[in-house]
Length: 410
Ligand SMILES: *Cc1c(COP(=O)(O)O)cnc(C)c1O
Image (cartoon, protein in one colour):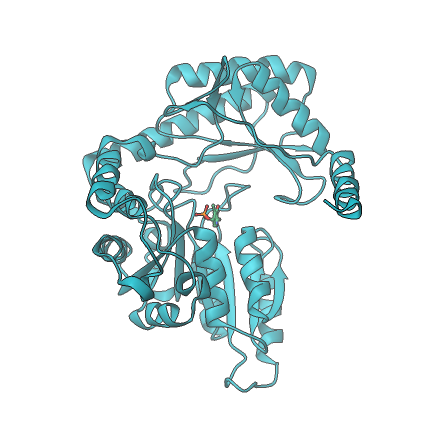
């Protein structure tokens, strides 16, 4: 390697370390529903997004294994090049039916769904307005589109209204625009709170803007039979673009967009991450389809019920550890499956996570650039797969760790 290349990288890495932002991968040798094993260490994990434990559900595993023997390990090419496998169409029909949309389209990841979709819908001269806390993939996608990017304060409808009024005053461009796309999330990934969706839909309709709703953390978890927040509020028909991932409560891997037939046809023709990428593996599509089918069964209902009681018990553990309630009171219908514990300082958050790990539980410290500088936190996620014994471990670990480094709760 040429010396200056290595030297530049070394200096940059040193700067990362000096800011307390160093990240490294921790190999896991074995994983079960809620436990990770690393070497001889056994850790109860409160870090995953497998909210219903479906990544290990027998029906999901069986569908996945069957797809491998029916279709092979890989998909061979992009779906526009080598033919589009029935396993992918089956997933998309199941998704569209589950969400009550005309159509749906699968992508290799949720990230790819965002980066393919936003640039297909808007371009230079148009406007994308995102909530300050939307996932990085939507920010990346908005930048990639070349549209003007504006950010509104988290869940602040007055601020969004101000920006929408500014956008309506822009002069028209070649596409008859500007087109204005608002992007938000149903459950925010690092804070666990929800967008004020009903009011937001009114506002974007009032201004003639479009809405893209990322349901990554609500699909399978919220709403009737896990159909998400839009379904819970009966707003599905008024949201132009619904996005989600197959990798969280659905226990598989991949992303999707659901909406009108015209939207999906446009994406097949214009979404570069769909067109220029090998189709998702058949096993992932089949696993996600099986998980969607489970959602509407007794198993699905049971898992969502279990998740709610684990999340409530988990919150009690954390409240006890800090002797006072954390966070705002969850809004009605909120599941509480994502629980942030504010620490602030990056190094302190890492130190606390290290102490918890030493005490047998894995809770990730979330730092910049995932969240703003100085707002480092522990992020606990709960799953239907957590047992009462897992929660006892959490209780014990927090009591031990918090004596040494008391964080500041929200
Ligand atoms: C995880 C996540 C994504 C990305 O989905 P992947 O399938 O993991 O690429 C998108 N948006 C939000 C809010 C997420 O939490």
